[in-house]
Image (cartoon, rainbow, N blue to C red; front, top):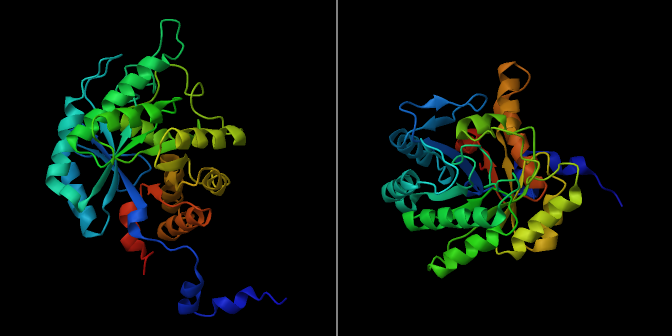
Length: 320
């Protein structure tokens, strides 16, 4: 059989005709950081065109994003005060409520759900006195946060803490309070990675002691990574996600096949910063590098991509 691959590459129309990955802009999700502590936008190192903002500046940014058809957002909220438990969620509630009152259904607003930006120690869980994870109390707090976000008007919940049982706990509290149709996009396969640095500065969520290897996945273990997503699927997640994206490409199709759920990928801050900093050093064309990275992620089977460059999609002409 004659497989002449070059035959189907002779012009743009033919190449586009044969592309088996269809990109829709709403499959790209733009992270956005809103802090109670900042008065002016603060640039995030390595993440060009991404800032930690107050609510008013965030609204201005979203207005700009809508004009370039970027309408799908993942929200990270940074409160002024931290505690060890009994978290004050007034800032979170009022921010989400204000965003949805302003933009209504013109945007889809997911919210990250975790404890790391709330706790004084910066970890994604609560601890017992012996410094072991207090899973029961952690699940209660995560569920309370999710319900608060739902009551404020959030469009979707995205738990990122990696605790056993958190998806089931969140689904239960949402259903009991008549939020049956609120989707959960679970960080279902999230590795303890070296590529989260810029994000942790932006979200003010770096752990004050130790690391997160006690609950995030070991990047050396493929079976655990797949089991973790199966766990979230069984607990009621609507969408699954791998993170970091480019270091999890081998898992996406496998997870899809084992769960029958759509699986997305988070192009994390360290991955994205690698593109921006390489471009600044003249080592690559940024737009072409970003476009390539997205197509590689989609080629691996990802249904959606969370990327700090999502607002650049129209500029990249990736849907033309």
